[in-house]
Amino acid sequence: MKMNLKKTLLAIPVAGLLGIAPLGFAHDKYQEHRTEHQSLEAEHGAQHQDLNAEHRGQHRDLNAEHRAAHQDPMTKKQHRRLHRHLGKEHKEGHKELSREHRAEHHELQHEHQDYHGRNN
Image (cartoon, rainbow, N blue to C red; front, side):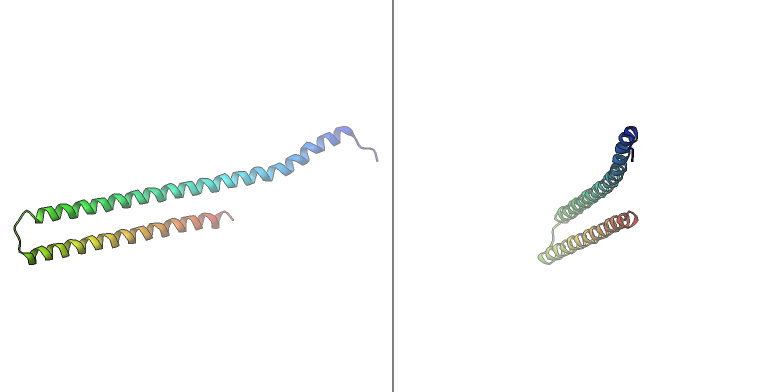
């Protein structure tokens, strides 16, 4: 069997391309996956910043309400009632922030799972 040198030299690069093409595809999928994760991480970080800003705002509002209430004279009973009320508002604010936080994590988790479901 006579083998042509030109055909042999041409076959080697073509065979190499067949092996490299899937690697390029895998690299593109990896980059897409990495970009998706970076996007979700950025969204997650922004949500935490928003929740922290909301939390600080709630504390500022409660402190302002507290200072305003102390401008007027009050009995010990009224003072205790004020602080119970402020404590209750503070606790409710934290509960609401926790609910928002869980909901946002749940939403991001679904986005992540949807991405993996579409790209498997």
